[in-house]
Length: 204
Image (cartoon, rainbow, N blue to C red):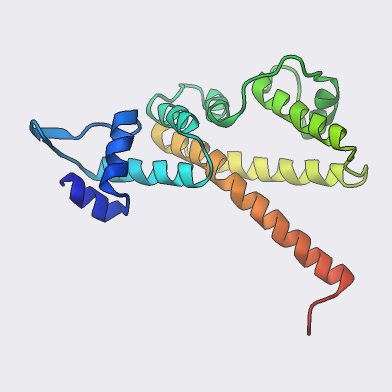
């Protein structure tokens, strides 16, 4: 299909498609003339992934790293998860102390060597933000967070496809990036439902 047809099929404007081509996010089409190229379903699928990532707040640079993980998956399934997370996790800040982080994530079953440093430092950064704000998660709430998060993680990892590396990469990378906003939104809905049930304010 021509670029105009690719645009019509995906809902992405031609100038935006050309921008993705220049940025290397979208592979070049098959040249049929010096100024014309043919595009296929692979390009349409890639465009949908790009739009989903960007619409979820992922930056161009992070999107490029996610796409690289899709195109060049590691051989080990566990390393695949680390690659997916590395694409969307801020760089390590080694000035942060991991002592409290390691104590906390031990409640998830963590042991040294299980996780990339980047995800541990991300927890440390979040804990630092809480401390700076003078806010502490109640002691009876944190265990519920940990138990719930571990149950979610167990279910997600159990669902990783094994029929092909490509299927596994799509599931892990896109699941990591695109499901997190859904989880946050569902948490807020659940909080409001729980609040309405506790404090009232909803007409019968």
